[in-house]
Image 1 (spheres, rainbow, N blue to C red):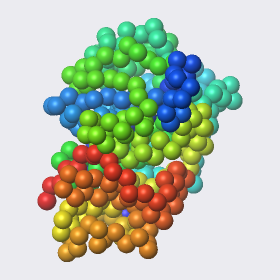
Image 2 (cartoon, one colour; image 1 turned 120 degrees about the horizontal axis):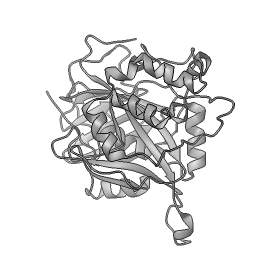
Image 3 (cartoon, rainbow, N blue to C red; image 1 turned 180 degrees about the horizontal axis):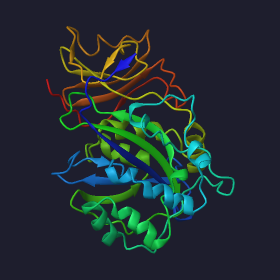
Length: 337
């Protein structure tokens, strides 16, 4: 049983954008053998998730629910049945989808590709500025260029809700999408200081060396995605699980004698009755003492400057099994007692 006392977060979405690498330009003995890159942004010091590397995304706006969107999609031949295919009625529905459960799934019969299509003839800098000032301008962009958001090529991946210890909280739906060719003309702005394409293993390596900082969802998802080295297998996996639903990932903070533990769903200590605005749990034990490997573990651990993703005997529902691991990861942890 889960309950929310009061909603005190913003809803948002984040895109995990994949693009094939030019393997012909790489040495034959190139390490890891990963054939794709992920689009990443480094946030500015005064933006949300300051100085961290994140996936691109943004908050939900009132303009996103404008009836004009339905008319736009209808003009391209989409019907109510196409929208019903975006989610499966018997799949778990998290808070963020309860009012408008849009999740990518099967495509129309004449649109079978799992990959996204990209318009390259748009002045992205100009429209980015206009949409940032007024979100309803996105609809005007689509009408001006006779196009529509390719939501049927967005594959629902996961849903994270910030813990109560974080000052600015977000309920974020993560989607995976893939494009054939990298977009190279994405500019930085007032919130983004750097845009880059990189393999997940490379970002995790730079993160382990302290060169880049990752918020917990990004650190977790990059580790999870890194289990796939082939982009076609990854995007097909994402496409197959997209309408099956998966549990909301809401970290439960525990203050230990020497640090913090953040319980994730499936951990043997994860509460049955979840209070999304609940108080911090305190334990008179060390972080290691709470790590009982005879039971199921699914958690973050933070002791001093060290951060770890710990999974043991954890069998995720409809998702990648990362096996038993104690994985060092340099993630941003905000603790507000």
